[in-house]
Length: 339
Ligand code: PHE
Image 1 (cartoon, protein in one colour):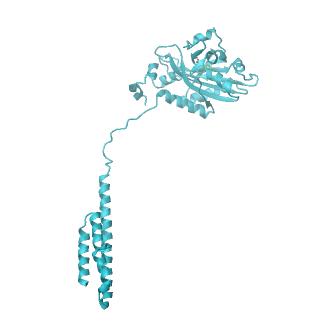
Image 2 (image 1 turned 45 degrees about the horizontal axis):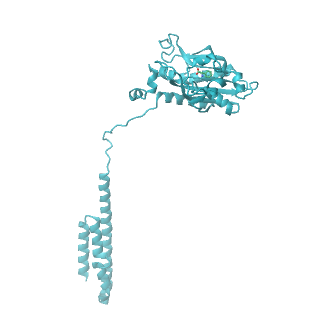
């Protein structure tokens, strides 16, 4: 019996040693330690062993089982490890391999300027609003003190859809819509596309403006100038110079046009600024009290200022773009240079 156990142990160890996959290993376990396994049978047959030998044989059988179990679990760990290594080897990534190249996108220069200006206005406490691109004649003209047949309508050649509906010629109708719906005090800015029947290298029938309007008590030209100065500094840096010229808009009184250091030549004088060193920044002025009254705001209590920068010209100048049409063509060759 002892010899038999010794044989089982030696054979078992040898087989376990040479097992090279998990399935074979399990078969070996069943062969020796399973329900009908060789060792199990011996343990079951203990009752036939003479009483005086039972103890010795019993403890030997137990130690054989222990040794086989130990060997099995050692081998199991080794085989599992080997399998893991194999999988890791298969899934290895070569991080030194050259990449296929990533195509980098970029924001359109108009969008970039737009975002920059809007961020600036939001920091200054403005609410951003959007109003329709297809407007009523009332909001685009009449409520802005430009009655039918007023010569000021000639300043803006319009695309009419019907007698009373047109593509907005400027973002100023946003002023009217804000005054109609918001309670002063308020500060709004409205970015958007505008449309005029104009077409050459520096004019496009579609272009972009901002409308800014501030309404509060005791607002005067000095408040306007302080804000404009701050905006110019934040957009063009603190060395920016500004100058103010008188202008005319039916909806502001007084009206002014503000120029800032030409960004193409940094004030040295170039063809764009016709040697003056300045280029137009924007037009604006103190809101005409008649406009406030027309939209239901008490002009004895409230006053305000409004201004309307066009953004396409600024984008052209800062990016040295010779023709405004490039901004609207969606030509990738152009856009790629704008990164
Ligand atoms: N809407 C005017 C234009 O397009 C600009 C402007 C805006 C003037 C606000 C005064 C106040 O020319």
